[in-house]
Length: 357
Image 1: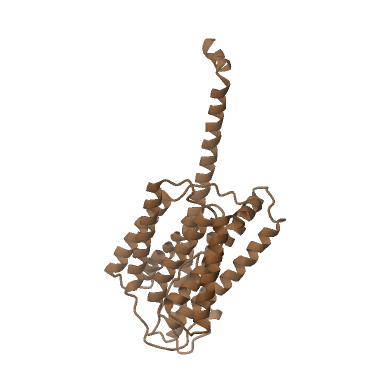
Image 2: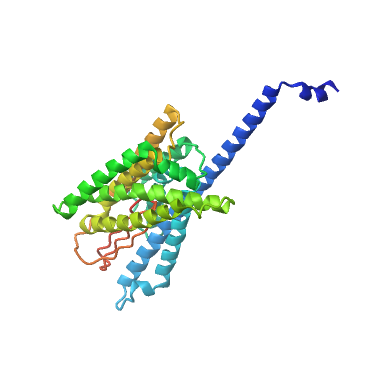
C-alpha cells in the first residue's frame, strides 16, 4: 500500500523533471529515427544513380559496337537507366527533409563507390589497387560521417525558414557569396578565364543555394504530409524558384567544365567543392552544428577528408580521352550533380560521376 501511494507524495518538481526528461527523450528518438531514414534514402538514391549511369554507359557501348546503331534514346535499356536516375534523385531530394544537409551532401560519395563497383562486376572493367584503397577510405569516411553527424531537429517549417533567411549570419554569408560569384562570373565571361577551379567554384556557389532551397522545400513538403500545411506560405514558392534556377545554372556550368576537362579532374574537385559548400550552407543557414561537441566536429571533418581522399583515388587513374569527338552530356539536379560523358567511338569512351545531390 505504501509503495502504491508514494507516487502521490513526490514533490512537484520531481514529477515535472521526469516528464521533461521523457519528453526530451521522445523528441531525440524521433529526430534520430528521421535522420536514419534520411541516411537510408540518400544511400539508396545514390546507389540507384550509380546503377543508372552504368546502364546508360552499357547502352552506349553496345550501340556503338553495332554496324547500324539506333539512336540511344530509342533503347529501352537507356530509358530504364533514366527512370532509375529519376527515382534515385527523388530519394536524394526526400533525404533532405529528414536529415541534416551537412550529412546528406557528403553521402554523395556512395554514388562514386557504387559506380566503380558496378563497372568492375558487370562491365568487366579492371580493378585497380587505387579503387580498393579509395573505396575503403570512402566507406570509412561515410561511417564516420553517419556516426558523428549533428543530431538536430529536422522539422523545417515556413516560419523557421523565414527566420533563417533574415538571420545576420546568413545575410553576411549571402553578401560574400554574391560578391565572389560576380567576380568569378566576370573572370569567366569577360576575361575568358575558364580554369577548372573557376568553373567548379561557380558550381559550388550555386550548390549552396541549391542545398538550402532543396532542404527548405523538402522539409516543408514533409511537414505538410505530417498534417502541418506549409504550402500556403510565400516562402515555399520563393525557395522552389531558387531551387530550380540554381540547379539549372549549376548543370550548365558543370557541363561546360566537362567539355573542357576530363572527368578524372572534374569528379573529385567538384565533389570536394560541392560538399564543402553544402556543409557551410547547413552550418550557417540551418545552424546544424550549433550544439555539437568538439569531438563530433573533429571526427565529422575527418570523415569528410577520408571521403574526399577516397573519391580522388577512385577517379585518379581513369583513362583520359585523347579524342575530341562530339559527346553527349546527361545532367541532373540537387545533391547529385551527375554527368555521363560518352564518346560515340566505342574505343574512346570516358565516363564520370560528378557529385552534389
